[in-house]
Amino acid sequence: MQGNFYNFKKINNYKVVFENGTIIEFYKNGNLKSIDCSARDAIDFYITPVAISEFIADKFPHCFIIEYRVNCKGNRIKSYEVELTDNIYVKFNKNFECIKVE
Image (cartoon, rainbow, N blue to C red):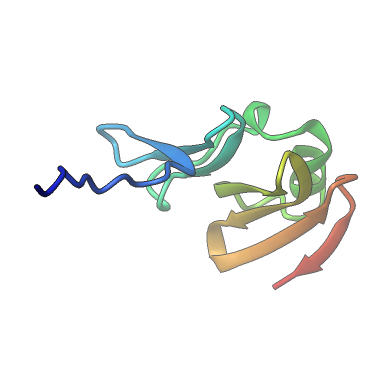
């Protein structure tokens, strides 16, 4: 007799897609993973950590954040990344210090 076999997929994150195309992803523990506005809308500065918002406003006053990502290993935050209009990418360490600009 053969048993029933099911395909179980391990859930690593959750994704919410809004009508305007904005995508918000969460890790399985509920922590924010990313926000992607796909260049149609900017992410409000109050959503990102204050240190990141202030850095972007100071160094790139003509740009807006269109993607925000929190990189984790387990439950520990490793880094933050933002994509700005004008195809600028900025990476911050876990202490919100800028470590890379492309």
